[in-house]
Length: 310
Image (cartoon, rainbow, N blue to C red; front, side):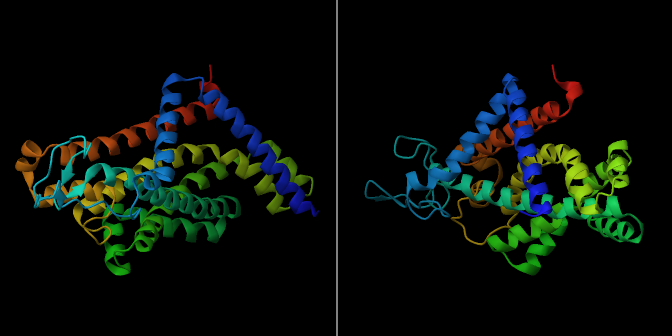
């Protein structure tokens, strides 16, 4: 085993031990535990839900015939056959909500993790190397941050096309600059610490210094940002679908698209007053996950800061 592989192995084991300790402190808080439980519940729903309800995992079940009678385009209220009712187009909301967990969480995971990896690498390079390299990376980051992210995402979707792959690519391009700025700030602070100077003075290579000392001590703010960004990405995805800039296809099982079907089908006050379930139920499902993720993010922030542990 090479020295680099041994270093990576020790780093992974150390990160695992610290993550286990973080989870222990996290579960000591009832509120954080509730956020973690709800998040894990949604993850389980994303994995097993489409299997349980059957059909295409990306599309809502369309039920235009109910007990042999054609129901046209009028939404049906919640009832035993349709626990969450139906929306415009005769789509089963319960079926769509269950399948939508996989799409929303899947896209959020791809976007957040990809953005975090790209941004962390660029931020670490900018913070540790400095000089012209840092200036180029940070000016590029500033350019992306100067454009409202929702506007940039819409433009990218218009260029790349309205597909699942294009949505992920567009959101990753929008998301990485936040992590670059965050990690660079952490690295600038940590590289001045005495233990980093001692490592360099002892002959440690730049690769070893960054991997062994700088990145491990910069990663905890990234944990917090990732947990918060999961909710932000899901809200952005829902907003783009609601505005009509998301995936093509009316029966896509995505929570923002389900709400968009209701507002585009009925429109305004009529939908809210007459067919409230078409907006309220998918909206509450979306709200519950985002709140749980935010609570979990606050809990992670508390347990990763020793000054806040009790």
